[in-house]
Amino acid sequence: MAAMMQPQIILLKEGTDTSQGKAQLVSNINACTAVADVVRTTLGPRGMDKLIHDDKGNVTISNDGATIMKLLDIIHPAAKILVDIAKSQDSEVGDGTTTVVLLAGEFLKEAKPFIEDGVHPQNLIRSYRTACNLAIEKVKELAVSIEGKSLEEKKSLLAKCAATTLSSKLIGGEKEFFATMVVDAVIAIGNDDRLNMIGIKKVPGGTMRDSFLVSGVAFKKTFSYAGFEQQPKKFVNPKILLLNIELELKSEKENAEIRLSDPSQYQSIVDAEWNIIYDKLDKCVQGGAKVVLSRLAIGDLATQYFADRDIFCAGRVSEEDLQRVAAATGGTVQTTINNIIDEVLGTCEIFEEKQVGNERFNIFSGCPSGRTATIVLRGGADQFIEEAERSLHDAIMIVRRAMKNSTVVAGGGAIDMEISRYLRQHARTIAGKSQLFINSYAKALEVIPRQLCDNAGFDATDVLNKLRQKHALPSGEGALYGVDINSGGIADSFSNFVWEPSVVKINAINAATEAACLILSVDETVKNPKSESAQGEAAASAMGGRGGGGFRGRGRGMRRR
Image (cartoon, rainbow, N blue to C red):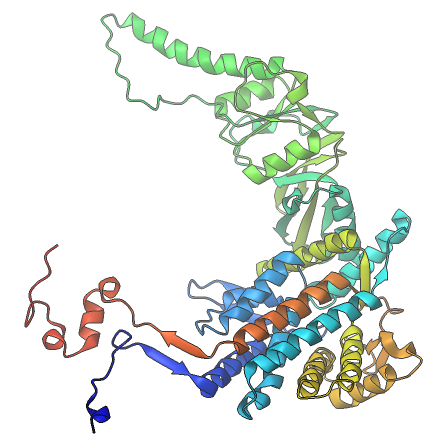
């Protein structure tokens, strides 16, 4: 009786929602599976696209897993983990974002029946980690190096990797055309790691085939004043001056007050202002530059002044473009026009202004350091060009990765099937429950080839059975067989040049396993009620009943501010 009289202990704030135990873990797994189902259909060359319409009215059509995950406003705390792994895969490797979400979703799906049967999550986590390490070892073992080849061979091998990435995107129809363009761009920037050295400019109109690569810098003609059309639009081996100052008459920033006793003195003040700007312009001309670019405005007076002296100028050039010109031409951005020496001036073989569609572009080609490239994208709809840009970003990342870690594995689900077979075999050598768990991990890896078949409209069961049979051959000759998207059967992915850098697979398996283990290790979710102060009166009235239905001051003292 005494035990029943004990007062209830209130530990958490009123309105706090706690859920724990098996049911809560299963609900987290279901949420992650739902997220994986959203991107499931975008996998592979025959994947569908998603049209996402946000609250601002922007429409995005995309096939890229990371882009879709970013745009989906997911509020479920466990499902947010999948968004994070998609983002990390995108920033680390660039491609394989859909793969990583799918794998994580599938690992959890396979774990669900075990959890429901009462298996402790830690046992699952331990087995999953073991399986992950074994899988990564196997990927490294199966990877083929492309090191030590001549530049031409390497180029064609890298183009194969880029084509594999692009085949699942909207621009897959022109993958060969874009793959060579991407490889040339990445080779142009050499060992420079900064991705912003490859500029992508979008010009609506024309067809995709009208896109071109500039081995140098190209940017859209900036806002210009009268006198601009009198400037020459083409130079050979010009000197280029890069500035970060305004070249126009401007009123003083400080509110200075000048009192004049004699009206004739007024002219001397006006003259002083003009002398300052003319002095600046003279120094620019004496420096010997033929092309003057500035991040800030170049006014009408300066434009006309340069035009009279056959000098090209452009103001309000974006910071990114200016840095790219500096890297390509070997110039340095100046914040003063005093002491302009040859060392700070850049140069290039040809500078010209060209019409692209209905835009004019300033193009610097044949740059000495050659560490930049610009891809000018053409296409019909704006959304299409946006998606093409995202696709090229993925391909550029992949080619960079393949150049650094020069090992590739067979794509098209071949590597997944081979790891799956290896893990199943390995599981048989283990006594105890973990045999089942590693088996379920192996089964989860088959989601990639299965989904490739489903998205292409093939009979997944049929194709997977053929693949299992091929991979189970004792000679090991079937290790490179994957789904053949064109015929609906199976084919040797490696000889069909369906390649991907091994780092993509290693990263995807690692990230997906980590995410799955993280979600499995959560056994309680505590949701705090929104704090009253932040929500103001809305929260107070929602609490209902306290303080007389939320009318402030009735039944309790007013808070003094």
